[in-house]
Image (cartoon, rainbow, N blue to C red; front, side, top):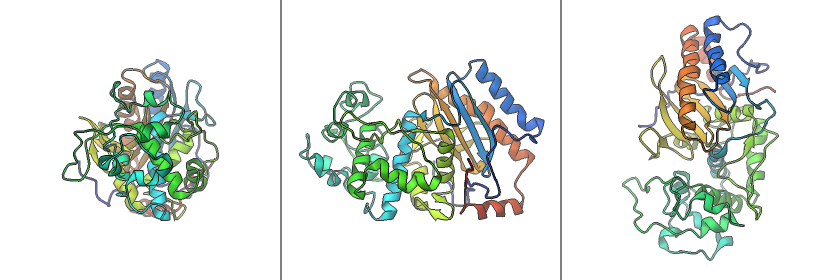
Length: 381
């Protein structure tokens, strides 16, 4: 599916909002509250096991915030691979800082501290940052294939995850298409290498760089990074964040990298990250460590770009609805976990968003206010 045009509305935070309130506002009309109440009944009935939070914002205003089953406003959520997307945003920031020359730069050119590499050669040396961002590199690595040399479960038993990733073999049959990219193979080890590239390019520990360039401006003050036994920061998932901080990231992405008038990530990079770069499967495309798919709703199909992770975790941007959604769950390694989250979104969240859009379509003045707010989003504590 081709990227949508620049006329799409973007997720923005309304500067006039003094605080984001828990759940839907007390003044919400019954019709607006009904989908949320139905969602809570469904979660209580066990339809979406181990759901811990659902947050929804539209036009920068929090419509809904609820916590379940051990979740809470201060809980740091392990959304697994959903936070791969944070690594993509960090790459965009490093490009803006001039630390990285371009996405076509060879990744292994930054990894001299890991040389010599096993299975070295022209094919490995030609792997670019873009290849790693789009899960289309020549590394023989596929997390969906148990026997794959690069399967992430093999990596976790090693002392140095960077050494494991850098030493992976390459695919003998690897070939690039007319667009210059190879076939899609989901590879966590490749995203770990992006973290290593960022450290060498920026001269800073990757967690410190991300906290300074992205988290501090967003007001994210608490996070927990997983590390390898050797101390390497895992940039391929497992970063723990509060639900509201995940929502802030979604709103940053929807505002094309702008926050309080400052460009944290270049708008062009964010647009490319959210656009389909590779076709992943029958229902999903993949950008720069962001998934894309269409969701059914009472008001038609809606395309979303999102951060997705094991357990049924999803952090989504619905640009055509000017909405951001966070769903955190702990239903790890369970068949149907992602399909459950899709059903939660289609049956309840999008039902509510469609009702909100029908009941209060933005006026010309409201659209102008939203556009002005794009340069100064905020999420109050």
